[in-house]
Length: 78
Image 1 (cartoon, rainbow, N blue to C red):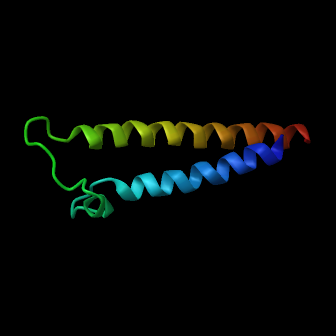
Image 2 (image 1 turned 90 degrees about the vertical axis):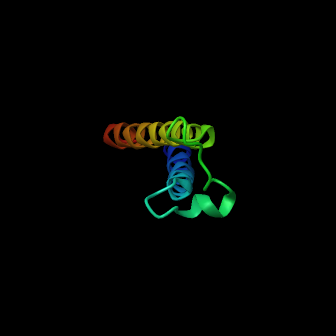
């Protein structure tokens, strides 16, 4: 069980790093390389940016859950 949560933690960490780097920062960021540089002026951010935010939050929740689960398993002695 510890191995499964460790693998989940490593994969979610890599995914979280990638998703954070794709976000548009002040200077554009890596999202400009993949076509995320143009945003509509109506809503403040494009639909793609909003979806990227939601996916990043989901990956962050998975990451936090894996850390908490690993902590509880290791405290229990597994």
